[in-house]
Image (cartoon, rainbow, N blue to C red; front, side, top):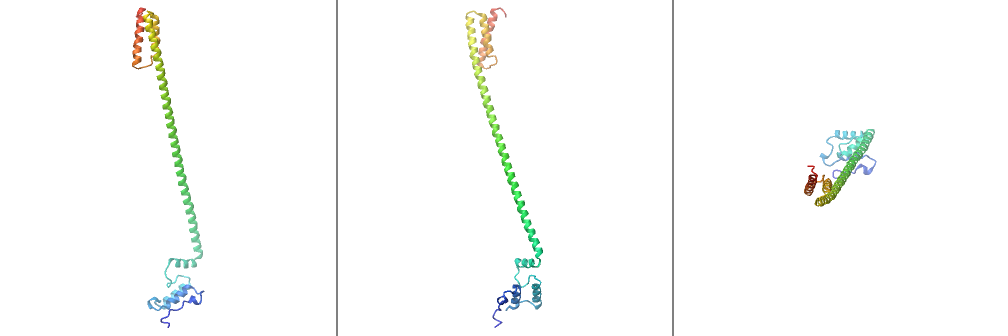
Length: 212
């Protein structure tokens, strides 16, 4: 009974029939009135759209279906759009690679600059440490010279005292002068006492010669 049995799709009889034509036919034969075309005019318009290669109203709406029909109608324009998209993607990929390359180069340059700065800081620290060592060695050497000169001054003043005891006034003054010469550029409590001793012997020697 045709009122109860669904119609057989056309493509089962002939697979070469277009799917859109099969859909138009099945919609026209729907059992429920609200699923059919509202009028013969609308069915005719759908048939005209099918013949013109446009998307039919009976076909479930979908972007893929409509896009496919548009491509079939505008093949040259579709090829041009596709080529433009491919070129755009290639240019985007090249731009992305260039940006990434620039970022990598910038990062490497910053890293290298920081390494150079750190190297310079290390060299500066080494130079400062070497200067400190040099200064310390200089101070130690001066301290050793001062100690040696103090010992020489003590010896000279001791000899000056011995000359005084022997009443050798010339030797007393001369030895005291030599002792004073050893410590003239050395400061400190110990050297101040030695200088006082030296001045005493020198003045005493001069006094004996009646020069003051």
